[in-house]
Image (cartoon, rainbow, N blue to C red; front, side, top):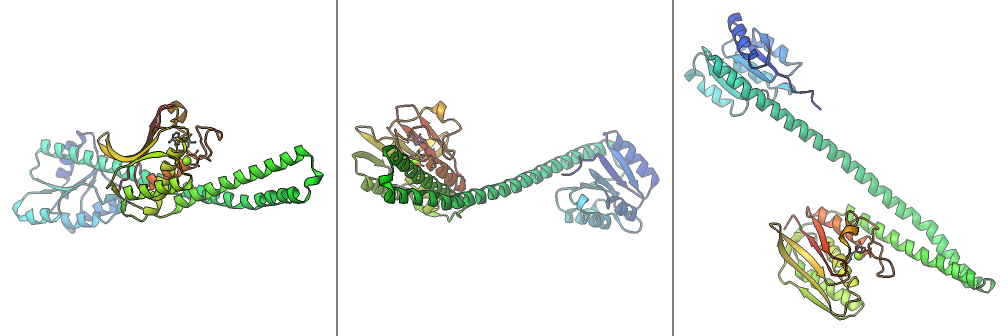
Length: 374
Ligand SMILES: Nc1ncnc2c1ncn2[C@@H]1O[C@H](COP(=O)(O)OP(=O)(O)OP(=O)(O)O)[C@@H](O)[C@H]1O
Ligand SMILES: [Mg+2]
């Protein structure tokens, strides 16, 4: 982080009266001043600190004003400091002024008019301060980004290792309870057998959770390979797969011709989860309807998956819906681990988009998402 912006102007002029006069005028704007009698002295003063502006006589003995300015620019702390040249002749210097380009360089004709010097100083000092503030802000954002990326990486490798290492003891629990069931069944009473079966069920559920955790980690780590994807066709394929898996009468309404730029593999996982949820949470409807389409939402086009299923209570969903392992329905109402929507959100975020949902309990649900690369 830089120190707070300084309010100091460096006045470079070989005539002591000019230096004094310029300093006097500049101090009226609230600036401090430091004076240098030559280009060499100015360079020495610029090596160690920054100034909010440099007022430089063009005609200096030894290093002239332009050469001094060029060398000052080489110092890190003075790369963007505004430099205002003072010259008695404009026409002869015009080309050089122009050669310096726009931005932090300007000139004043001498004799200098105090009001003009003050006005320029105010504007340049302000511009310099703003530029510094923007730079500080950008640096801070970069730092936060780096920290976040490192923390994310750490978390991902932690959850991957945890999920991976959990498998071994789980396999032992599952394996030994199976042996007990197979070889020692007569030695157990009904309650003992029930306990063993419950251990087996719980082991199966935990295996499922680990699979889901690993799948979520895989989505997070995977790179996005962008290409044009026919989302309508993809939604149709996913719907057919769901339908074939456990046939049921559902009225599918998939809007034709919807395309997007995205990663086909990840978008398939996204649609499988959203359409799979719509399927699962309409299971108890006599006339289940599931739609996929695109509509304008608050001035932007968003894709949606809509169903007329059980819906959810928005108050209950707030802050939870897209978090891993958060479920709004019990396992009796519908099976699941609560990992699908967390996966969907990661995919949408990886595409630079947003996801949100609307629902009323008992009255269906709509999931909206955008993909930035459309
Ligand atoms: N279409 C929907 N209608 C009603 N509730 C939904 C719908 N989609 C999701 N939900 C609610 O949001 C919760 C989280 O959804 P998510 O897809 O993450 O988990 P899941 O479907 O329960 O399990 P999984 O996807 O891991 O098999 C669900 O448990 C359910 O309560
Ligand atoms: Mg799901």
